Amino acid sequence: MNNLLLGAHIVSGSLGIALGPVVMWRETQLLRAGKAAHSPAGGIYQATVMLICVSAIALVITSRPDLWWLIPVAAASYALALLGRVAGARRFRGWMPAYVHGIGGSYIALVTALVVVALTVDGPVRAGQFEVVPWVAPAAVGTVLIERWRHRLALFQADASTAAMSRHRRAGQRSTTMHR
Image 1 (cartoon, helix red, strand yellow):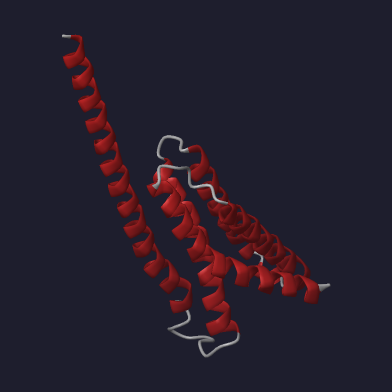
Image 2: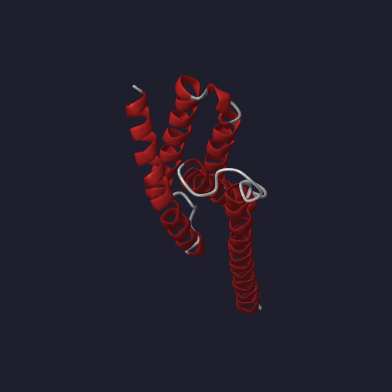
């Protein structure tokens, strides 16, 4: 049973790592086209993150109860993916930071898990002063990248809003001129 869970966790984790950048790129293109950030790839990514998190929780419960603290981390990781998906689709007030931080934050969680397992569980950084680096580095680098992405989307949205207002004003001026 644990081998099946571990296999599902590894396969879904690999898929999530591969899909994350594709989703971010594709949904950025949708946003630039004036559409909602709600692609089929985004749905697959969200489902993949859910499978990763459920399998992680099951592995902790069945094999490593000493890692109980990973259960809320897994739940928060899925909550971020869900937040990004809902924010991109519904565009509620403040949706853009929620979208970017949701999708980006869930991806940082996946990368952090990969790096921690590769470097601390099965790798060269077992204990000592550098053990914290695999836990912190993905968030440090990813947060900067997420903020750049959010800033670029905000600039694009501001440019699109300005262009729309300008078109609206020109249309209003034309209709006023025609009625004179």
